[in-house]
Length: 561
Image 1 (cartoon, helix red, strand yellow):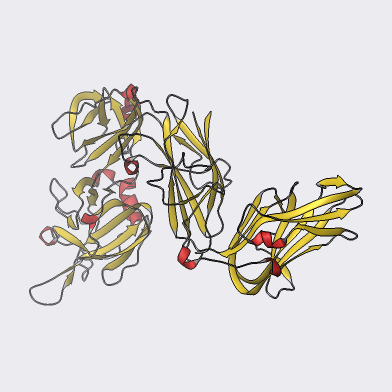
Image 2 (image 1 turned 180 degrees about the horizontal axis):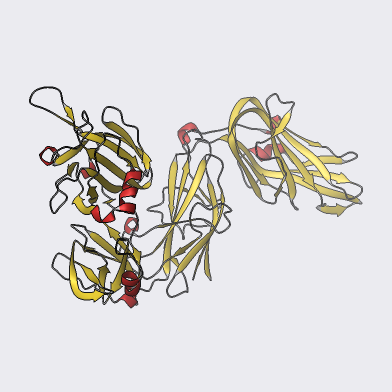
């Protein structure tokens, strides 16, 4: 495992042109940028501060004035000594009372002492009673500097509680314990809502990187978040065009994303095939069918042995239309009725595919002239939750008299039947792929009987939901299952249309699809692909109701192999 550590002590690891987050080189951390218009610093001075020893029988004195802790000069310092006759644990406090109530969400203490001191920050509303900062009930070990960031509170003052277990010096027969600060500040800080860190290319000794992981040292208060992404670096491409992979830190107990990203040197290939034809071959008494492109060529660009992760999708930008005849009784058509058709009379079900459109063809070409039972299925990928209305044209105008209802219908989304009102349903699309099914049973609603053939409609319409605007559509949500050719023709039922094989560099099926567009995707090894550089970006965000809080990134260890 090869590793690089980004610790932000300088800008060498940061792409300054693309980064919008704030790089705090002094504290070696990345945060959201401060919204200076809404931020302010509390004016403090030594007259407001008082040091007290809480351990009995001690003597203490200021070696350097307390005023030095509030002068914003790192070269001066307040220094207090506590003397005792025997080693002990010293408890002390520094109370700073504000002239007036102040809103604060950050306190910075730059220590000036020899050995570490354990500290706790508390606040007061009245100058008398103190409470720990929310989420900070335990003392923290402070050697050089400590920053307390917290939700905004209105206070009258603050108190630093000290605990020191080891003496710093022994002279003149007494043990001396030092306390002090080079600088103390209390502020109210507001931050912008988001920022991005882009790193410069991270170079590894590994000649060709296959896997990347990270271990991030960060602080993510409630109401904020940090999302990391990594990409294989290509100097010929803009950063935004790289293939970015979300990734979670290795020490996350409930990771949002994968902890390890694989950079396989296997580009994905796509082959679209819109036609099918029978071959001259017969297997187990069954005709072999192959998929072909528009030019009539069915030979794939690569051998089966070269391919990895083959996926065959069906009905690209299409509806799947199923139709058959079922005696009309006026009841609502249900998916359970379609299951009965496949269980009891699958040979009577006709399946074809139609271009995605709001116009649904009901034509009965090629058999099934009395078919009155239809199901249209398509799947739409959505990036976010969306609510869209959809209307159905189930009423037909007549020359004389009111509109005539042409039958019954039902709409399913992700296998859940929707409740219709006035021939309209409300569709909720969730992030990811969503299956939409529209079912019709056409017949005379008044008489509860079949139409004669000439009365059956030839098309119907869907309104309000413009399907032409959807960018990612396919009729079948799930891909076909890849099996070997022997299994396809000897172990799979002829009525099953959910499997395929790659045989003699062709995609073969056990049935002849009608007007269906297939898309085969697969990966191939790229022996020339060599890359030992990755880039990382981190998206820092806060919610609108917490403008005073920022996440912090202190260190990122990037590992590769």
